[in-house]
Length: 233
Length: 233
DNA sequence: ATCATGTTTCGGAGGTGACCGTAACATCGG
DNA sequence: CCGATGTTACGGTCACCTCCGAAACATGAT
Image 1 (cartoon, each protein chain N blue to C red):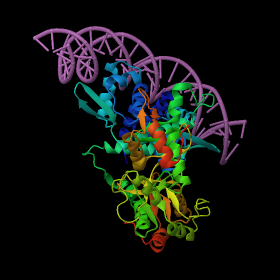
Image 2 (cartoon, rainbow over the protein chains, first blue to last red):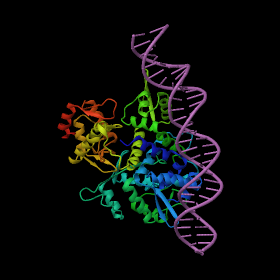
Image 3 (cartoon, each protein chain N blue to C red):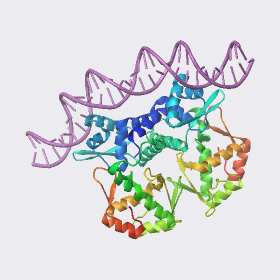
Image 4 (spheres, rainbow over the protein chains, first blue to last red):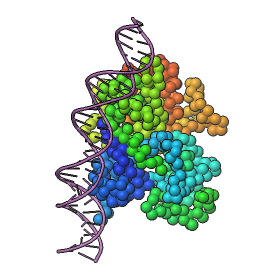
């Protein structure tokens, strides 16, 4: 059994408001400096630095030195998945009066954003829906499958699921992720990550300054329509 | 976005040592009284009562009144999944010197136990392994599939995946769960839950007093060998 | 009705931890 | 070398929250 002490320590680290805000800010998969995270958490840089040291020590956050900056990111996919789990529970407790659609800043988030290492929002859900409707994928609440035709489709775009299709059946299992804005699943895990990084690499999407939202470029609009037949409104 | 406040509240609730211990005690899927949970958490009944009230208020725990007793259980599968996520992160931080095999009490746990609503330990892993080797299932780290032959096998035992095989393809996706004692995945989700409850219903396994461990009955040993060809050592 | 068991409420004591000044410490660019 | 930016260390204050004792409250058994 994972000792209760270790369990409690991790949960306590995630539970303090300033740290929680910083961890949530890191959920877009990017690496941020302590200063940025301090603003995200609403505390002074000194305080944030202390928090980050504890998070790093506990293995929730990893740092990379780059010149004068120290970039902090979530240490592993397991951490991101843990956060998702907590958010799912927190979401069920969502106050009815607290409307989910809040202002224009969230509009971009609901349209397209990153969720740690994969795409979410209407873009992420539309991609998942398209794959299901075309028979390229099957998605159930607990798990998802990318069918052989789906693997081929991605391969034709230059996305190889890095040996995951090794030999035999070209079928890849992956994890679904419940989209908090659409309340429907999109593709996560290795498949979602590969798809997302490909979109960035091809210049189909780019990050919106200071936000987890991403913008679909003109090139991206065209590519998404041609390759996937989807239009993200 | 799930508000940071809600996120932090849930994580804080799970992070306090006494509450964490109580939640972990509930991870076997059973319902327990406040008194039992007080012992599990190492606090007095008054304190436990207060904690349980908060956990219930937050939607982590659900209560059922039954005469003089009030039985508490995890409120949803989402909560159990959240706890699993935290435990996964806590496990990666496992101190090397802290050996995982501790004493005889854990021996029973490592052999067979419940993990919220499904089977774990060598029993759970052996079942999963057998299904994979026989081609009845495919298990990858992120997801798992119960193949048509696996669905048929379970159906022949009287386990119907409650409409999940509805019409079309008789193939059920489900979630894998990383076993902390075996460090390998076993079947979770609806499939794991159905399998587990069937084992209890048939008298193949029974709970060991005051523990999350389960014992395989003589009848169970025989049934597991005949139906699945496995022997749990 | 009375007792016993299990559970909740209340109030006060105690401890832990977050927070911010101030200040020292790295590191890079000029 | 020196300044600018970013990060870490220290000390004191303050608020939150856990915990238990005592006591009230339910429910079922005697």
